[in-house]
Length: 199
Ligand SMILES: Nc1nc2c(ncn2[C@@H]2O[C@H](COP(=O)(O)OP(=O)(O)O)[C@@H](O)[C@H]2O)c(=O)[nH]1
Ligand SMILES: Nc1ncnc2c1ncn2[C@@H]1O[C@H](COP(=O)(O)OP(=O)(O)O)[C@@H](O)[C@H]1O
Image (cartoon, rainbow, N blue to C red; front, side):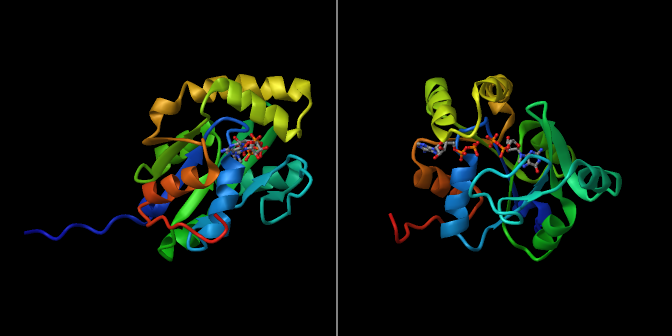
């Protein structure tokens, strides 16, 4: 029997997308805290940090000129202007290093970025995080309190488009409970989820 060819490094790559305020950041933070073996890519963005966000941990906060340089120098695996405002992109080098080292890698990016990664790394897993309902999504966005009414409307308009694309993804996970959703994501990544201290 012919040997099964080894899986390409990018099969260790998982892309998580989903509408604004569904809880992508919260689920990612839970994974960062409970699953140190999973590496979360740190995106570059031109948006301003929110209170509590740390440069180099949650995002690399860069100015528009630096971001343009990153694009021009092909330093980004994918990038997009999100919510019609700020640019966001995945630095290519660190992702490649982790994949080459065999580390399970998670990208939390928007729909446009997920489509770009699908085109270049089709072996990656594509996961859509969905809210329990549209009303709950609106509640979470308002409850987070980080955007004013105008920006919230803009984000909800993008969210409608993103929700309509859920069927493009390999898996849909409903974020009803943060740890449950995180454990489901870990299991979709082919790793063993574990209950952990703090539950
Ligand atoms: N394409 C792309 N999108 C990203 C990247 N990093 C974050 N995003 C997306 O940008 C959007 C805006 O993120 P953020 O400003 O943190 O606000 P949020 O939408 O309320 O989570 C979200 O959909 C993120 O998934 C990235 O590197 N590339
Ligand atoms: N499973 C959940 N149940 C209730 N609230 C949640 C849940 N997941 C996230 N939230 C809350 O929803 C808001 C948006 O979450 P956030 O992680 O910022 O979303 P995203 O990164 O997708 O924009 C936050 O206030 C967060 O505490």
